[in-house]
Image (cartoon, rainbow, N blue to C red; front, side, top):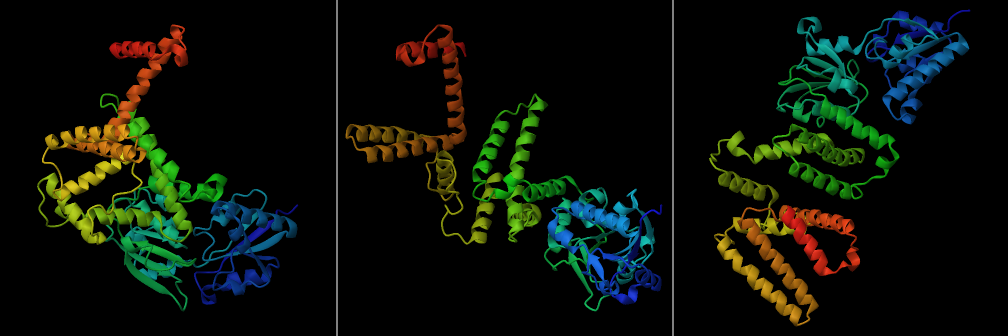
Length: 480
């Protein structure tokens, strides 16, 4: 019994002029023909061919695409005995489907050489790839395949701007000035070669299926973990039903929860116990995922990408540290913060010192932030001695409102009292939100011990009475 055969040919990098006579003869000889895609300038040379463009549209991942194409081709070969499979470029240059077919035990492959985009690329770049030691990398695997490399790199499969964004993100320590050459539709009448920089890699052109990039040199080797993490966020968004349902608004509660869990992990850090780092690492990761999640949603909506987020904060920090990246002199923290606020005000065009203070902050933190903003322009007591009397004054006004049975005034005066307490905390260098949280945790811990003592002594909390509970509380407090 004859083994089913797949004859694999390449259609070259561009138009029919790059397709060999041998390939044309094989196309004519084999009756049952298949094209990986008809989105290629030489696809018309393969008449009456079935294409696999529908697989790209239906599959969730490229791995699924390659597996489905290989399965269909193997089934066709088993049905017809011999089929022709035509791919763009050369069959052995970054062709995942060919790689899968070569290891498929159900069929036999005959691969015919063809001209690839590499020959034109090296000609346009004016380099000898052997002497220059150029490494060819698949854009879909850039973070891993190029790990530890600084160039020169020729990157293929950069068919979309999100691929370019992922590549840019993979190089964590890039300065942004590194040169990049974007090669598009090489050998075609509308060939385009664009010289740009690393910072503008995903902003310069609209990438298509005939796009590749050349990276002469990077200042730092390629990193992998952040891009791998970014790819995971995109995969979950595409394939997990829960992730697919989320919106920016639905994720707010999780963003807040993860932020507070990071705070808890920070409070639990023990300088003498390195194992306490584990909890912080985990919680920082959870918080980072929330940021990635929001960026992935925005990317799907075509609004912005994680690269935009990273570039935005990078550039902002450079602008606001002229004493580091410019010629401004700042020898102390006070000058640094003053410069920061001035630059921020100029950037935002703000007319009030309070602009930019998030309204969604917890109330104590919000009060602290507002007071600090006012203090920066001189509206503040010179020291804590000026703030103390306000607590007594506001407490007296609360009592007066209570005696007057004025509910609205009670609420208003209680707010003023809390605001005065925050003012004292600020002058003492105490973060009020953290202080109240610590006090609440202490109260909870002590009352839980009261519950333990009550059970041991057969007391029911609801009926024990205040005097008995207060005695237990004093016992717990003394024990601590």
